[in-house]
Length: 117
Image (cartoon, rainbow, N blue to C red):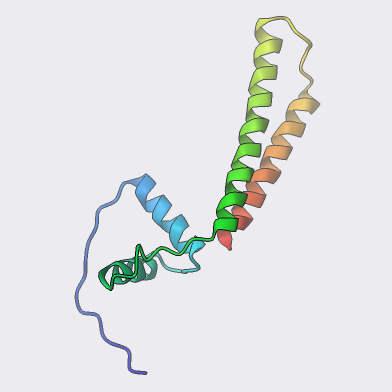
């Protein structure tokens, strides 16, 4: 198969958030390069093949679950710190905070693994 030489460049300006989300979407769709993903998405739209975005619903559900657990861990830490500092509640032990931070780190590592697939 003869590769077609590409001689034109299309420039698109993105915010940091847009760039990050495009990179995540490209990796999630199995592309190593964001440019290749953008080319395929646009080509699919031009060819009338829908949005051109491949979605892995199972991975998306896993991400939502991971994010929910991370949020829950952070809420627990925040609530405990507020109670300990403001209401004179039970003293928060450093080990408890470290355990929640470790659990949050584990959730983030699991999330990272899902994102890298």
